[in-house]
Length: 141
Image 1 (tube, one colour):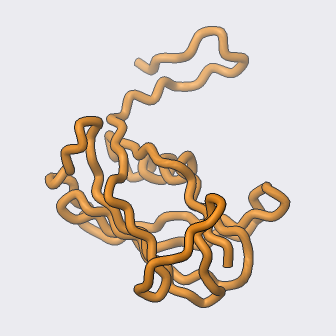
Image 2 (image 1 turned 90 degrees about the horizontal axis):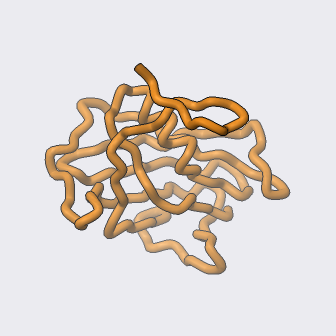
Image 3 (image 1 turned 135 degrees about the horizontal axis):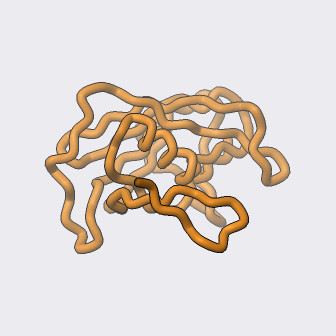
């Protein structure tokens, strides 16, 4: 039986999945640390970007038992004027021994974002009983 939020204008199923954080996150472009300024990671069109971090619980314990048997996809959405466009590419994602690695190429200039809400929807679609909590990540190329 699904739980719902009472009082919301539209009832939504209660999301009881376990919440994990990403710690020791590293973001690179072509294997080099990216410049970070004013909330944005700066890279160039054509750069291969990689985000890597450890999946950890609230106490900071890395979830080394977490693995995915295949490479999945993480959406990266281009924005314009602060709003998402129809442009969406996918990073290749692996999860091995609690370490999440997402790799892909920024195809052209723009404001590209990894949106946590969108990623948690994708995680739910594979039947995972967990979700991630982190800030959205913005790449300006």
